[in-house]
Image (cartoon, helix red, strand yellow):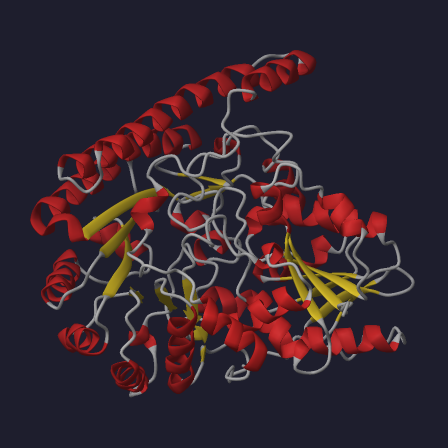
Length: 570
């Protein structure tokens, strides 16, 4: 049986023509699961698909970025030409897709001029009016919960009446070409009916006979990590985060955090453990939840006793009881925290109000209770952070490794490619010592076409220029790589591979800078083309190895019998 979807959700690469015009992407994605192509689509795709499918609107997910990244013969235009939905939906959640998402929208409109193109996501929300200056984009869904608005929009599209005035959170162009902005009032306080159900993703893949297109990240079939969303919104106000409480309140109209019921979190974890033996990442600090919420989650996990590695986030140090509970209900738990800097004054400036002593107490308590891996993330490009301060952060990393051993894994990465629009620091840039280099949506699209990541950066600080951010990032990467090798955290081959890649990147960025100073445009372009033949298109990471981010996995990543059972009977 051949199914024709009503809505096709397309995920674009960060830069559409990355295969033809390779760039020095640098470490812009080193400490996230994706490659610099940012092929991981938002979890919202899954919840949108499930919400609409339950109400009779067929949805197909196509990860163009993954297909283009993993198959040099894959022709995205030929693929899109064969698609005939009632509408295309393209995510622009992370701003790094500003170029790729619009280019995919152009292709959709050129090949299917009468098919509406819808955009959504946090970046779409922030830049909704500017995005509609692109004639190939017909609608923008605003907010962090697109499920109900897009259901209502698709219902109107199916009717064919052209009456979109009542669709909530919608920005659109009417028949006269005028931009209309509807009421922004669909911000659910209760999100239990929305889920990122992986069973539904497998069902969609089988339904449309295209399992490759629903693949989430480049190595997902080898390492199928899954994520459990606990909430929408946040209680914290980290100043560099576009998803902070204040940021989402200001541009996404979310005045309060919305939690999924703790019983549903437990059920999600149970389902994931049935389908895969991979790590399960619980997104959102359970310590920011209402009183009693965490206890229900832990009691449920004690009852189901999953064997998978479970990863939890800390937004701030937790009480001792938290680690005791983790150990009692999860046999293999891991922790992530992002203190940003070793310097407590800089950390407070970033909106995080805790001491190194409190964090170190948590490390000790976690390790004493059996924590398998405790990841600590530091950043470069913060308010009041100098080159000397970055050096001191590296000293602190050395102290952590010497004190706690190989179960504590520090990372350091630049705040890149952008300081988040909508974040407190972006909106109050001068107050926090940031100089914004571009602010309009079109500026970001043009920036991403530059030959190296240095020219992607949308900011400098009063303490670090673009050049300094780049230089200290590579220095920090080399030094931390050496530290990890010295304590046995990484082996000889991994150490040499990362060290060589950093030196290669440093050399390339110097060559690119020299070429960009050439006056003649034609000569600049010729030399850049010649140089870029030497850039590795498939360079996954620069200043660390992606394997450092991973947690152990059970022998079998996928449990295909249970997946088949879920697809057929679930």
